[in-house]
Each structure stands twice: as structure tokens, then as C-alpha cells.
Length: 134
Image (cartoon, rainbow, N blue to C red; front, side):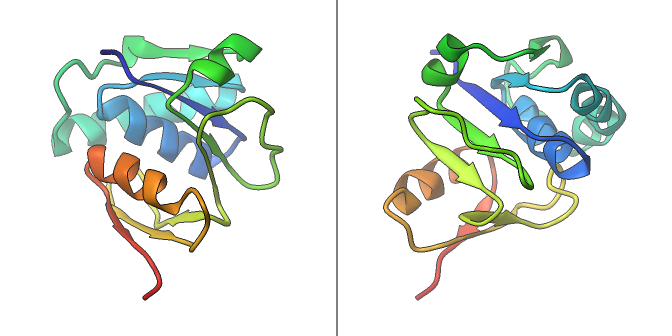
């Protein structure tokens, strides 16, 4: 089964998330071409760290549609970007605080929200080490 992620937002954090999902073997869609450029810069480091089976830079695309949003396993929203309607699972900088560089460091802090268990499971599946407040 193909897994997919959408990253909404720009800058280094967005590129880091997109690289993390891509290295985990996801199909990744970003909403900005500069984020895709940032993934290209980060990709060699992700390759050196090790990729999940099926991971490939060719699985990155630019441009979102409502169908892509609703079909994604997760929509990762970065910075002040607005979460799109229709997403099954949304991670934001407020609900899931990853540490830089996201594509290399596995730590992500998860807030106590209704989606916390699903976020923990998804982030663990991509090699991250989620921690939640006790």
C-alpha cells in the first residue's frame, strides 16, 4: 500500500518534513516549488542516513488538489500556513514540534490532542521518536 503525505508551507521546516516523509517511502506533495528545491538539497544527507524501501526523490511532486489532501495519510502544516479542509490527519508546528534538522533528527514532541495517538503512530512508522506529555 502506497502511503502519502502533503506538506503545506515553505522554508527549511517544510523541506525537512517533506524530506523525512520522502525518505520513509511516502509519496510526498508540497504546495510550493521552493520547498521541493529544499528537499533536493537535503536528499543526499537522507540517503547517507538510510532510506526506507521504495524511497525515491522521484516520488516528490508540487501542487495540491482537494483529492490529494483527502487521500493523504497526513497533512503536515508548517509555520503560519493554514490547514486545508478535508484532511484525515493533520500535524502542525503546534501539535507536533519536530527538532531541526527534521530530516535527520528523530525527536518530535506531540501535544495532548485528540489526534495525538494517530500522530504518534504515524511518526513512529517513519522512524521518529515521538514523546508526549505525561
